[in-house]
Length: 243
Ligand code: ADP
Image (cartoon, rainbow, N blue to C red; front, side, top):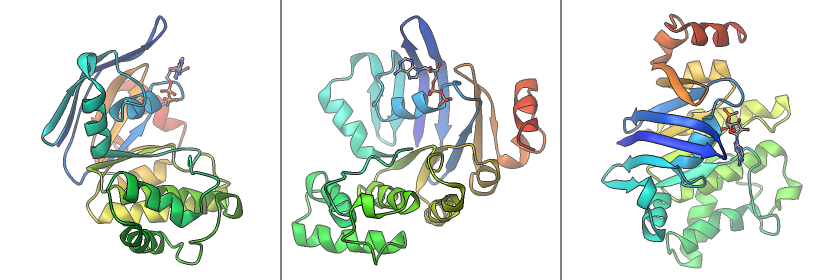
């Protein structure tokens, strides 16, 4: 349902994605692992066109985008199909939790204010924030802000949710609550691609693990293979550091 073919991205003379091919089935949870600087975040941002790939094609269900020739219309269509959850939450600080979730419902999904409010409340209840509807981001913990970020992504009903190290900005005691929410929505069959350093979580929640290094996919497969019996030396060395 998601196919990336030949995705390349350079920053100046450095090619940080060197032709990425990746296929993700509907309902799959993909964890992208790899050392810092290997291109994980750039790949995720390319899928949503927050970074413009230098080359390659992105297919999401019936939609295809040729990265070299994409115009505004195609980029808009791509973004309708994917939603991003950011490391730093990226909430509107002058809006309440509910207003943050309602924004996409009104502007992108074209719901009326009343409908958006109802749906927004449901989504915030789903991430355990039914009691924080009217709180501003500054009144919420990092874990709560990230859960608003997840509710906001869910509101768009995208084909895929892209998580960029969703717990790396959190104090350790707040990581669990965010992972629990992601785990819960994974069970609902929403397709997700998650860049993470949480090995235990990746092993537990992902059904497809991708190991990147130096701008390429070194190895990929089900967690039962990649974690237990990695084939490539680079994967082995990386995993050793986490066990
Ligand atoms: P990872 O997520 O695996 O840590 P990134 O995708 O963030 O890796 O970065 C891959 C490489 O691209 C790094 O060398 C990084 O310095 C470089 N890079 C990322 N974003 C930019 C940018 N906006 N401008 C220049 N270089 C960048």
